[in-house]
Length: 258
Length: 188
Image 1 (cartoon, rainbow over the protein chains, first blue to last red):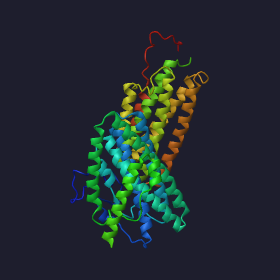
Image 2: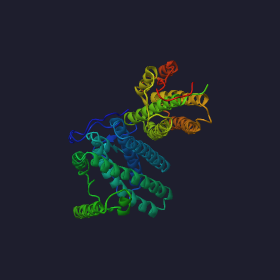
Image 3: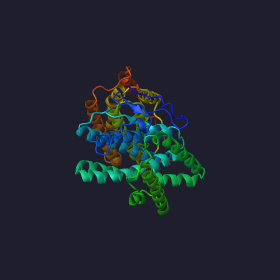
Image 4: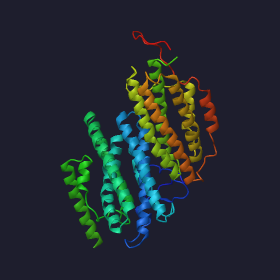
């Protein structure tokens, strides 16, 4: 059994709490460079992606579940959303598990990250967690799944297209409730904005520590899913800003890879 | 003799307390249970109990109690719920929760249906019928998770038998309020 794996010595414990439990089939790593990374042409790339996504969905489920436990004082309506998100993410993980096994994978074939759970463990504010988990990580996932749908369509993999499509609809809901509740919590107590800012800064530092080495931040394949962000409750200005930042990031990545 | 309106609210509110406790127990277990299949099982069922709590909490408001009225149960039943929460190990947790706690909860809902007036209290009956169907499905889900992962990790400390005994001994489990002054009510 793997529980609370020790943090990689290169990482600063101020940004990372204990990991969630994983059973003995899984090897938990802390850095992107320690994950299995394959060339686009390698058939293992698609399998590893399904395995990784399965683990990430579990991590989001774990984070939503932890927030339910840590914040019994939250309004019931918000707790209902957290419960819903936990269940959706568990279902997504199961979908990926089934897809991975159906394509010949074996659970634990590839290392898995505990990044999302560890970083969120250092954020105590519920609004801060929603800002990082739902408004940042989930939004990045929205862009990535949009790209994955196009890839699966090109491969003629209708089952995967259906899986991604259903997941994408669910994620929009999770982002939207976070947007709505961050606004409501902020309206009730403006200091929440400071908590959100601190949480985002901490997550950014954690993200850089985990993903920079090995090129995990040099992603330039896909842009911002603008219509989906609008459905998820982002304002036009927020979307314009996201598009501009994404273009800058992709340009830097292209130059680095050139 | 059928339950009074006040007794219906007290019983459904206490079932809401149990549902919230179940939701929080599963939520606490998701990160701390190693096995993927058990995490998925617990994660999916968190939402089931949230919905039950929501439906029960709306119904209590229709029974002259507060919206989401959630009275604490008797100490004996509360102790049994605490024992459930303290269970460690994927195998032991599924056994305690899905074999023992859910079965007892289903009995409590069945007792409610037997004790209330199906016509006068029809909205409660419909809520309870939907919930009991969910409980049956959750039990089937647990069987599927066990089949997917026969080698569930265990803590070696089983609580199922002790929990079954604690639940059986927790009678009564609802703490009924005294009749409110100024509200004329039926006599049970």
